[in-house]
Length: 199
Image (cartoon, rainbow, N blue to C red; front, side):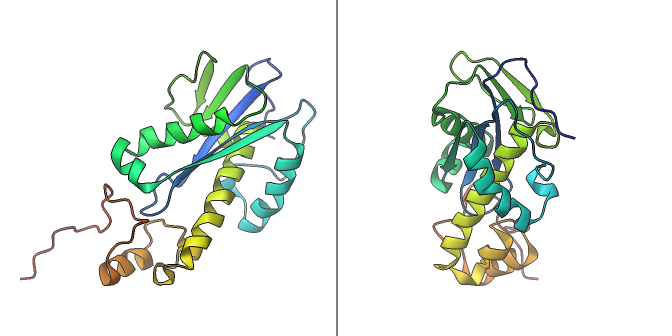
């Protein structure tokens, strides 16, 4: 059973990102403040639940949350500031969209930078421990997946609707065959052997 709050403050916001390890597309973060009495038995770390359940949870979280925000940081900025800074920036931008200012922020993972003067706590595997981080993980994942499905139409040969930009064998084979697109992260190692000598 996931816990409701880390702090004893009512306006506690959970935040998480999706797409950090991808070769293409944005890194996407969400921030969510849930009401005091929020309960859900399906909600968990988005990686632990099926795509179907995530898509069912998305409108439910949007409806029941006191407020939520979602932010994409795109490839050029990821390449410019690096993926860790881009992930934190995405979380900051998602928090900035909240209609209520959080009193406390709980963050999935172990890296974060102060957001204004609001106290925060990083929690490893927080998306499997706290409801608001789990809710943020579901929103970040579903919003990013929907974006990847949209750009799949433009470049169907990479099959982003299935692999969502992650470094699958199929995705890497497509990069080898067709080269890279404007959606690929140029600072990432897109192929395992960037320089391969033909002997």
